[in-house]
Image 1: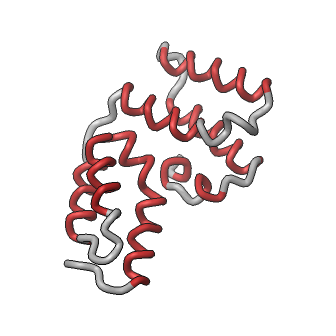
Image 2: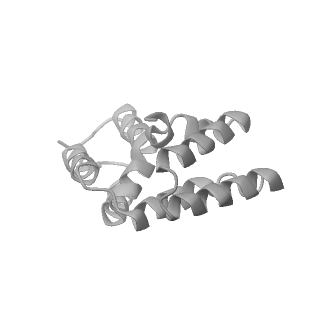
Length: 131
């Protein structure tokens, strides 16, 4: 199905904003395919978009991909986080990499920072809101 109205395109972009870090966490190649697909503002293919989303989300988690998504999200806080918040994140990051804590604990910390710093884009993301 080809999208024809601006409203439909905006809905697709909104859905992408919600899901993009979840997709990145599962499959960076599909993440890139969707980014290219959505560059076509006139007629992005909704069926292909949905198929790619489903394909990505169905994949197993891999630490390297999880790390990549985590670092992308952390990037929102690099300039506003306090030195203490940065140190706490780096400590928990190390604990996660050494299998001493779960990824959700890191995501919970990122969600707390998103709330504190009013990062609406992240607060609307499924990446942090599926905890």
